Image (cartoon, one colour):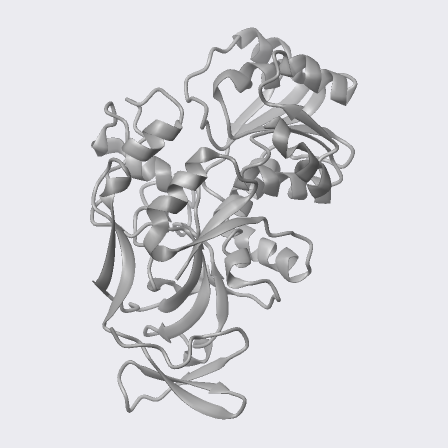
Length: 401
């Protein structure tokens, strides 16, 4: 594989020369360097549903070419999220009734149904390059995209929404799920999903945002959280939960975080007002003690046994929103809580248009803090996923290309 001369770095202008197919030139300190987009690249390829053995590292995977309206992005870093595990193991299929355990996440689930293995209960085609959380640089453009975009530092919006009815799951795709993503040296995406960003944060730090923060923003927005309200966040130390803490505080809310006791100090420093041990024998009672009564809003990515304590702790007219159920998708539910407390329960998956653009502006204004737990080289994606599944970290794990 041909090497880069030099590696693309922030604030480096890249411009093309149409005389040489596939060649681009970087200008650094008034000196020009040739950069060649190679025909092949390093990539981690998912070959089917199952365990970590389904992740194959390749040195010579074909480099994609941007189609009309697309850009070719030199991936600098790509963050991990639960979607990677859920898709690989086909956990989304209704035949799987347990949560994402360490063993199930590593080896897969015997009961999984490959025919409904995606977030939208559809079939995933293989081989597939996963990875939704990309930060990088535009290396080439397809027809219809201005050549001046080459060289831009970008962060990718992973939701490839349908025009018109953006909630149409038959036409809305997720980057790294229904199409190839960022666990590779290069990836392609439609131009409007490659959002230019001007930030002093590192590539690895920027790769912590796309999935976790868009999900957390949607999760929070679905409840209409208002200043002065009290919100409890289950799974507060994960990527989505830690992002939700920041976004709820920006809205002026009082935050009760539910997480492992060992992460208390960090979550308080991040902005939580109170932290409750997720292993408490009576989570509802502890929530009510911290809130000095009932809470207004509950945000949940955990499900399982945490679900009913959150529901029970809500006030009359309270709001609950969920974007995941890592502790288990099946719960017992006392319907009287919903009916006689006039509760509002919402799911939060497909993120509305414009969400990532608003978050980028907050990043540029230093209103959001990147929570980079650890980085791994691309070739050790399996090791990164094992660390991710252990859930001993706070924030996000990222692979660097």
